[in-house]
Length: 329
Image (tube, rainbow, N blue to C red):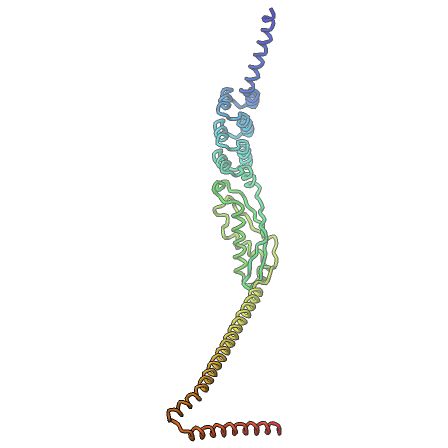
């Protein structure tokens, strides 16, 4: 009896669990919402999404949104983009924004832009509302050696056709900076740049800097301009300092060579004096040998000594006379 009494309760519990599992695995509420929005979709398609590990609401909610906005997309397209790792909701929002702005944008191109890592919705919005990119101060040097710093504002519009594979904002800023530097550098004087800053923007804009980028440059405006250093004078000062250092180095080299030559001359004189002393030391030996060998007589030797003594006496007399003359003066 007790078992028979529990049977209805167990049966009701099983039914409740089955219904809960059914509503968990089969998104019935989502199916009802789609039907209410006028989107015809088979409930078994939702079950198939579950089996393919696709979150049904990530596909059905954007599909409802697109249907209400009048954008023609299909479930298979949205499901395929989800499985490819794309953002289905962002792509649908971009398609709706493009349709409202009368911009031709197909689902395939929008999906490709999204899978390429770019924000397709932001690109569509930028096509309608251009973006302003401000560069930092870019320095260039005019021909007169004065540094000129300029800051530019670049108004760009996204080019939908070039978003995939096109360069980004960094390339635009780099190209504009290069154009500013070359324009300032080709000016004869910095005053011309200050008098007519539009010359920079006109020259840079005429170079077609948006080629190969994801943007179309609408205008380039010089927001601020300033004078920097006198690079020409600085270079001349540095050159003069370098020339002075070179001259000093050469003078020091010449002085060192002169000192070396003087020391060499002193060494040579000392060497000659040593040789003279050595030769004088050999004279008595030679005289003794001459006397022994009979090449010179005693009287000849005595006469030689008298002559040497007489010469020394005359040298002393001449030196004393010279000193007396200097004392009288």
